[in-house]
Length: 266
Image (cartoon, rainbow, N blue to C red):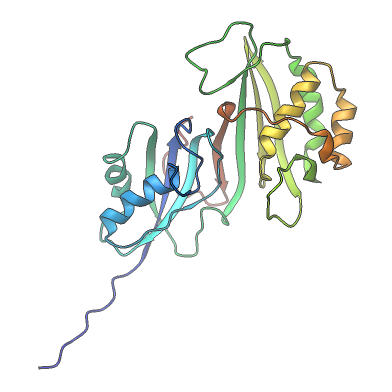
């Protein structure tokens, strides 16, 4: 009797909107012997799909950095409908990670390469006394009262397409430092100062180096013009400090055709 081979199962691509607190993780990307967001979710997916799953993220957040609405996708031959994956994953996660939504996308859609922009926000708690309730989501900066108006003036010239090589950590494999900044805002709400940047992309470590330099403007130790000269003249040697990771959050990812039904959780 001739054996008939069964047809291969169809592949479906599933996109996830993910929220996480990065305090207890060594960033998004899988690392040897260290907990990461990618590995945590990949291991759950692999156990339910019964085949190895690779999760592709829209952005690679560093150790201790948070996300309100990270986006990722994976391919699977599992018959589980795309809309059910959020519930499946969440039932096996710790309280540090939440999948807000799972949706089907076409096989040519990519969480990273289909993204039109990314938006990060940094929170500085600018008070002499700390606040225990936000210490894991902010930088407690108490040395000086920062001038948020000067900080905004320093951000404004960054709008447009520029080479921001001065704001890139060593170790990057990127061939150039050119990106397009679409929005750059700084504002104060009582003791909290927020810096928000929306851009076509971000260089490795860019936001934390930017904040470290921007704080010197807020302290009036660096003029707005000198701040601008440093990044325009690509003087990486003059960018000495990176802000701590806990104040940084990947706010959301923008797509020309948004596949998600619900809005980002913020």
